[in-house]
Amino acid sequence: PSVVILISGRGSNLNALIDHAKQTGAYQIRAVISNRPAAAGLALAQSAGLDTAILDHTEYESREAFDEALASLIDQYQPDWVVLAGFMRVLTEGFVNRYLGRLVNIHPSLLPAFPGLKTHQQALDAGVRVHGVTVHLVTPELDHGPILDQALLQVLPGDTPETLAARVLELEHQIYPRALAALAGGQIKMVNGKLEGTLAT
Ligand code: GRF
Image (cartoon, rainbow, N blue to C red; front, side, top):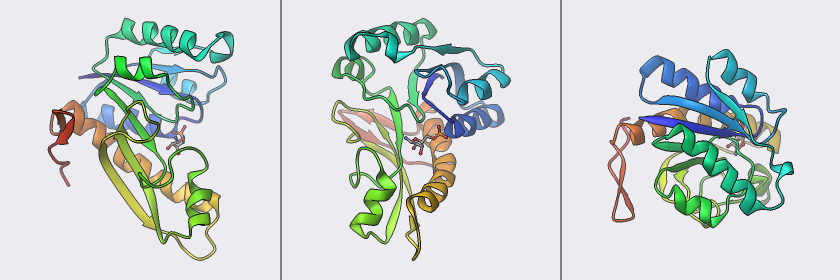
């Protein structure tokens, strides 16, 4: 099974996905695409010998035009899965529907709590005692698709958005490669709009 990974920045999840692919061969990374030319993750991908591409969203007139160009680029690689790893752009419904069931995202909260941005601040403001991360399939409603896996941690006295982000990020790196491998290997699949199967523990 093959994947194309979309990034916008640092690329630490990308790095975890690259490592897992190298170690297990569970999926093949065909390309890494960034919407930001300066994304640090591009260098990580290149040093792993992967194909990279930049599609700068500021050069497109509309969200639709950018998403059209992005889809054409992705389709050149014919991936089974499209994987969002810190890709910080909301995708149009047309784009999402084109890859429905094949588009995966990681979100730094325990969905359905705290969709959108600033999830760690949202968690602190809400006073929750547990927080975490979700890997899910993408549907047109932002951060609402079927959940593949989650991991959680305790919110500690004195936690700040930064300390929470750092601990959640460690969990992200653990669960994202595992969830993607389970999808790629067919252990989890969509049947009649619902996910079936379980992750190996
Ligand atoms: C991660 O926290 C991810 O969940 C969020 O953006 C961050 C990306 O980090 N959507 P990185 O680029 O993978 O290091």
